[in-house]
Length: 116
Image (cartoon, rainbow, N blue to C red; front, side, top):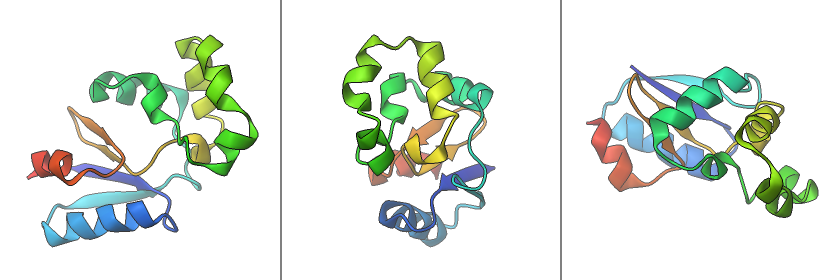
């Protein structure tokens, strides 16, 4: 089963959701604003993603910019980054696709094709 974690007003999330539906991929929807990922979930997803933890940050978000995280992340350790990400769903890059054995960050059709 696929868990689709998104912010419903996000256009990239809408594109990803449309792709899932067009390709008949069953999923459970989770609104990242209403149900923020926990530190434990983010730690697990980070290990499943194979991506650097910094990829989990929504670098184009207003909150990221207002907190001036571009420079601050350079001096933070992994635990501090996970703590920060779990503090507000709007800091997390979306959409996220979570399966038993993989996590996809953002929407890239070629990566989503691995779900078929």
